[in-house]
Image 1 (cartoon, one colour):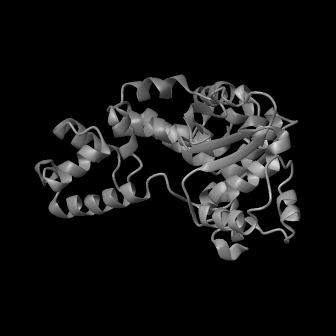
Image 2 (cartoon, helix red, strand yellow; image 1 turned 120 degrees about the vertical axis):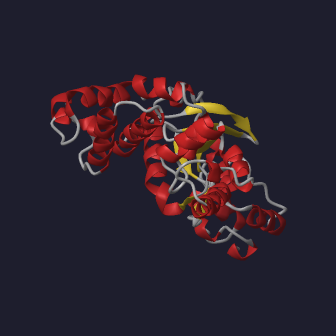
Amino acid sequence: MTNKEIAKSFQLLGSIMELHNENPFKIRSYQNAYRSLRALDTPLADMNEEDIAAIKGVGSAISGKIRELLETGKMQTLEKYKAKTPEGIQEMLNIKGFGPKKIMAVWQGLGVESVGELLYAVNENRLVELKGFGKKTQEELKKQLEYYQRSKNKFHYAALEAEAAELESAVKILLPEAKVSLCGALRRRENVVDRIELVIGWAGALDALFDGRLLEKEGEQDGAILAKNPEGRLISLYHCAPEEFGSKLFHQTGKEAFLDAFTWQFSSLDFKGLPEEKSVFEKAGIPFIAPELREQEWGL
């Protein structure tokens, strides 16, 4: 796990504990750990427990929890609190300006347990019944809720670039003989993306990737294996034989309009079974087209 992922685990733990009115000193200690860990340059995975405990705002108890995260990918204390907190309540923590105290008020005061129920309560003007919620607060929350629902699971390219590169590197370490590359919107460097996509050319199974620490398998859809990373980010994996890697990477990189135009222009050629992506362009007799230009037919 990265420092950022570990730090966010403590941020989430502090927030969920606040929802349950737990000891404020413990909550503050987890919030302090979050701030210290997210600013740390040295990877926690490269440090021993004594050095971790010496970090400002950490100490021996939190150091033990960090070691637990590094070794298992999970923290028992966090899992315990998540288990007794509805998923919809946890999701509300992602809404800008809507912190644990306000979430606790609507949860306990109105029985609201999901973002959808919260928006309904706002539209029904029910939040003004609660202490600390005036009409102005309710209107601002409505704007944030509508924005959250529009932008849910959408990220700026820069926000996922490093995370995607780390995942690509981790897969290459676990499957050293495999061919691995980012694809889709991230490889095209689109401004807004909704997931991390990878093509993996490997003759064997991908079981080594789904140990919970790197990825958790969610299912399959449209030829992709769906998974989530520890941060809950959606990952799509396209598994193929190594000798088909180039063809698969080409197909999973270009947008539909580009691929349709390419297929129409070179309809007499067969681009299946190519191990390297550059072979697609060589076979077509055209220069290599950068992934960023594979948006529309003008990329040709």
